[in-house]
Image 1 (cartoon, rainbow, N blue to C red):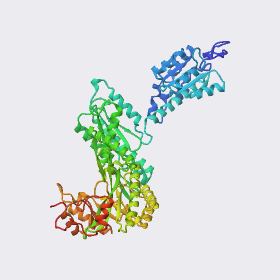
Image 2 (cartoon, rainbow, N blue to C red; image 1 turned 135 degrees about the vertical axis):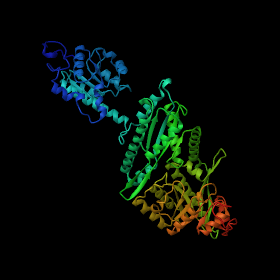
Image 3 (spheres, helix red, strand yellow; image 1 turned 30 degrees about the horizontal axis):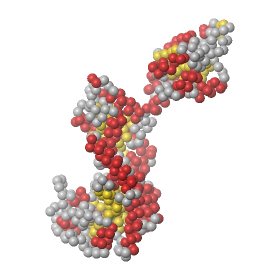
Length: 636
């Protein structure tokens, strides 16, 4: 009860003593016209979630029962049906914890426990600190008001309160709270429920009673190469792309839900995480075949093309990972981790595909994580060395260049080299570290060869554009050149980056590097992760044709494709380099097609700098095993 004892009672009665009541005299009821202006059920809200404001639970703490009764009657007239109250302030906090009100109307001056103490308890309680509070009190002291607001109160109204003002304050406070909660649980870009809602839904599904439990699945969907789209076209284009994909996925999930048997709780639901990832909760999984069909439809839905400025069509795909419960776990964190792991494995497998989680995947992830950490230390422990694989002229067998290959001798006795090391360094940070290390060693080695008056080959260093931007590559190369690396002795072999879009600044930077003498090679051309469009986007001098073109085995004869690739390279003024050549008949076929160079087991394996110099840089004769024979690639 507030200390001021002068005032009037409700309904126009007056007296020399008695507490101030909530409402002004004669205003405990509003005319229908004014009530309609503040009644939530009469309003048109900006968002459909606001339509449920009348279902909000409003709680009042006041030591005067009359105030509580008057407020309850008024709120009922205003359309609010859920009201909780107490005149015992000492019981208020426990009542809030059990009832979880949407709004608290709080008196400040009460015996035993006052309103300030309740506010302070709420502020330090994770479950209550976000409950909005409107303070109703007789005091006009500005310091009291500031203290209440500092403790978390959202509104401060002095008694007696104008009923229409109270109704508006309640409505606005609830609306603000609903909007705040909406933002906290929805992705602002797509309006889909976010990761918070996703985890809540998964927890609820896993907590179902045994009789209602079924096998289900978490389906994580990652958009391929979104970062490349953002880098090349700007974040605004990337956002538009995500909005389009979200609509297509939502339509697919809605159609699946409409066809699903059972109650509404078994229908799949779509969520959006930050970045390039979506997720679908499938509470009920009938069988793997049915789920696989749904996943294929999700793959199709997320695959979309868009036109950049009306001139270029760009196609975007997604990769999907699936974790099935309870097979792959019964705890939410484990399931989410497993679904994400399967999705990342699908991305690394070539994209636009899906993977189900397995123990093998988990073991591989743990092994990769451990190896990645070990690789970071290997550079400082001299466990890594640079080998050189020769590249020779197809017609003469003479050395034309080399490819730098990293070999890592792990303390366990395992040895990793080439692509295995590149895969372990498949992050932007580690990729930069690896390239910088290779350039540093190549700089030192070329100085040593020059000091011995040896003819220097051009050495290729592999750069993965799936981890690094063109701007980062340019900066690494400039840094190496400033440190003493001779650009004439370096070939940069681009791998991946099929969707990369160079900016005007990128093109200018690469033009400057080419003038210095650097060569640029498109590696693994024709294989996964490469694109014909790269020949027009990147400053390419040579193409290395993927080994798949020359492998024998089941399937269509790839010789016509290989021949067309060599001819195309020549028509564009590019040198062609065949890779993975291990057969003399393959070499004869390359000679007949006038392919410029080749590398592979037929010449020999990669060796250290000393052996390479002894075999290839002092004796420039033809490779002994390179006798030309007739035939087609891969045929013996």
